[in-house]
Image (cartoon, rainbow, N blue to C red; front, top):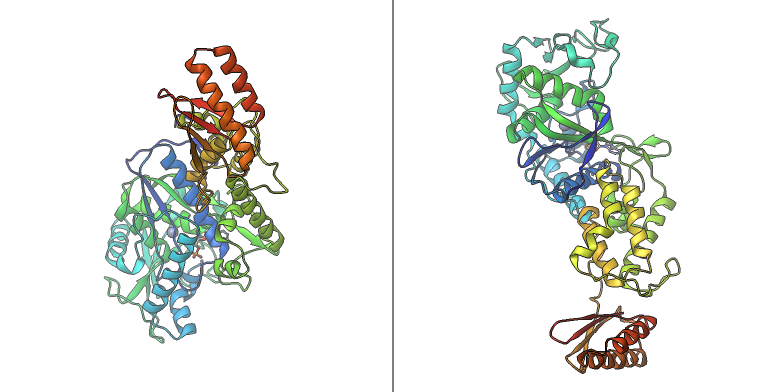
Length: 495
Ligand code: AMP
Ligand code: ZN
């Protein structure tokens, strides 16, 4: 694909032309904290990341996609306080942490499969990478970026001058301040790298470390796992927009402090799915799962289509009406591609001006579609471009279908899956067989008229009576039939 790909990079707050530094392109996505079901807000972020990956693949890049599983260390508050979400979830459900995490990881994988999200190359679990995290903290300690408090080892953000840059934080906020609600932290923005196990409560998950028994901070997980599997600087790192201020800011600080090198080249962030004017959050009560939608008769891919109704950098408001509208739209799209008339869509009719449905005819049709995709994944615009093709009565049905199939490599909506094949019927002709393909809507009388004229035309052509052949071609067009003559004397007819 020759069109360039432009992506909005949070680091520069600008749209930049994407170029790869590594082959395959390295792509790290912050994964779920597996203490509960993923909600459809979380899934919006993974859908956006999937479109990003498909866009890269369509550009001809290979992609090495790492999606981590957070199964320890993510505390209830992003400010490093409160309980560990996994430990708390295990208590809630009376399960071991391992059983809890593997149950919700499995459910998450089912959601991804339902949404046609392409499989990542690796799903590293935080609990399998404790040695890499300890190694990184040791490196930070050796370089003088850490300090110890009574409850853990902390990153000293005042030692990393660029700390405020990524999230455009007010520099005031990183000055050492009053120790209000900060525990023993020196600055409000400092964050834990390693936490000591509490003295009064027994954790299920804790490990020996050079600093005593404890568990890692959440942010160090993503730095250690991304650098364990992807070459630095990592081409792309993505997540939800809530990660900009704390999680990704901290990942950058500790990774660049530990390695002395740039961590990531392109940072991409998806905006939130919101509900009732608030965000949808696993910790809040207002969350909807994909299975709940399914139980309501909403196909998961209709939710995927719903996500394409807003740009990934705009908030999207969930509403039952909105999702029902997406379902109708999804069914209409598939119905029209199947050639089944629908009140919303004029049934296709061939006019004379029809290209072949050869692959080289498909790509020019999709120029607007790809332009929208490569313009920072503008999916509302891409969907509008696809609808324009699907509704265009000047394009043969076969070609529209082929174009939709190609676009679906990006969309992942299974637009053609399970649709009846366009039937091809064969009739004897004058100089060779006549193969008639239609959307299955012609009656026998119409077919007879068409086949008869094609046979007459074959005969005229064999007699080099081009004028007669031309008249017959035009008559066939008025019957809705487009003839393609093949060198062996047979004819293909698209209706
Ligand atoms: P978590 O499991 O909470 O660590 O979140 C998993 C992913 O979902 C992260 O990339 C979050 O930024 C993202 N996320 C969380 N809530 C929402 C939401 N309401 N809409 C979109 N993405 C979200
Ligand atoms: Zn992360």
